[in-house]
Length: 236
Image (cartoon, rainbow, N blue to C red):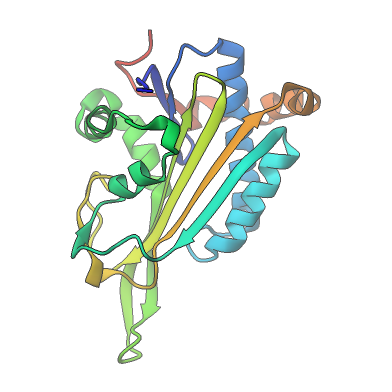
């Protein structure tokens, strides 16, 4: 079943894609609850330096604030067999089988336009700021301290049945990060440690979320315009 991109947002640190004309209230609930859970996890752990602890905190927050987990798959290593790779290739592989054939060219075009168009510059800047940090790591061979880039790429796809597929690709590299990190081809030999990948499929349960809706709406009220930005050109 081929899915099209109906609307897309930068929702805090996540590139969030809707594949159907989801009811506006559901769309707002999905974005607000996801972002609130993300901010809650960020307050507890640094996702760049303590990724697994941050992931556990995020999953717990999602469950607490109304999400019903359907499937979770975590993978470390094994993704890179060729000399080079791109995070977008991994994201496409992690999308569930019922998304096949996902319009990879459409997704690639969306991401390329996000980072290339002056209209989407604020959204691109928000995403770029939240997905990469400079860190220092010890070289396994010499013990010398080297500068690396720690990258955590997050993408969400909301399906027509309101299920949300959340994908995260995290890695450290000695290469400089390009303007468009999703499509950047990176050398396998530049990696520091393994690539950490996980895919979550869950659905926002209205009965579980309703007790938190007002609290979350009020908490995000002053930051919504700063942290939730539409990618222009897709909204109908």
